[in-house]
Figure 1: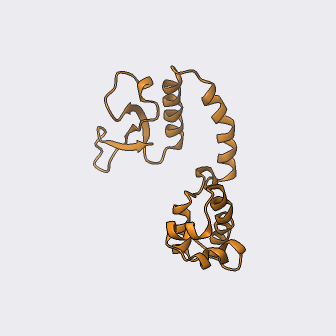
Figure 2 (figure 1 turned 135 degrees about the vertical axis):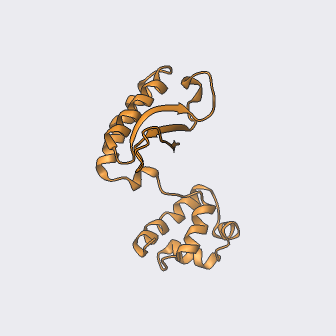
Figure 3 (figure 1 turned 60 degrees about the vertical axis):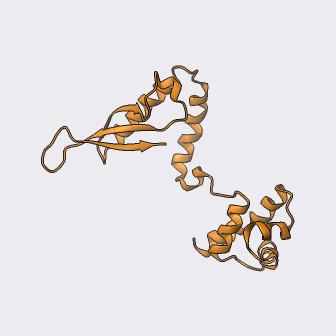
Length: 156
């Protein structure tokens, strides 16, 4: 993590500590970072070392929002798609989302086409597996021309 990123995360330490109703001393005990260092970080007098920042983030349950790591165009599509997914009743939501993932996987190409999504663990129906991992079975020709080679990619 570069200095600019550490400075950005450092600015979130005090609000997160206050939200958890912790004193600097209590945070120091939880994180193993000296109280004086915490004070310097919170006041902006110091940009924390990566190791200290990590300890503070763990103690405060801070972490990057997954969508922050995506490019803007991906975040825009997520914003459009999320309410649509929520509006689909269960069932058939899991079946619909399986089809969507298969379509996206096929369009992405690269590692091979997604031919089927099956639950990782045996269950009566896909509807029973909401929130479970799925296994995407991809089929691709290997260098020997073996058309039946199957690779498994886990999709959380």
